[in-house]
Length: 208
Image 1 (cartoon, one colour):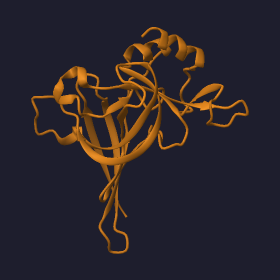
Image 2 (image 1 turned 45 degrees about the horizontal axis):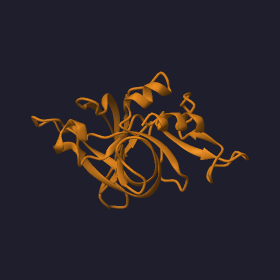
Image 3 (image 1 turned 90 degrees about the horizontal axis):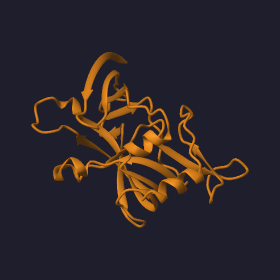
């Protein structure tokens, strides 16, 4: 086992992830096969003081189901491009089906893509300390930021959660189990202290 310390500076322009990320890179040769590099990243994301701040920042707020996912490298640099490759990172991209819309120009039945930092591609695995899994059978409420407003060249880029801690909720039944129609909402992250209610969603939708 060979261990290395790697400092990665990631500066994403405008509303892209803005972070100085410390990463630990470990590399191990397994049974004579190709080396697998595991990179762990601790990233800093914008945190919000309350629900209203999240609503204002979001370009879309939707109820959605996850259809599938893929892992790819994404270049999030803003023009003019340079040789700084730290902003070309490995992401997991979830394809979601929109079920209901509370904010944004999408409509029920639309398909969107949502990216999260991290994933395994070939012999490199990137792990983000704050990553949450969207790979669930439960319907989710997602607070998203898409990038089409920054120019046509960014319209193709998958949207992002506002942050991994505060921007994803699932429905909970009266017996405390997830799924179904749900009587309340629960954050996917135990670190999130911002509550979201069904009444909140109704009020957000009425502003459209």
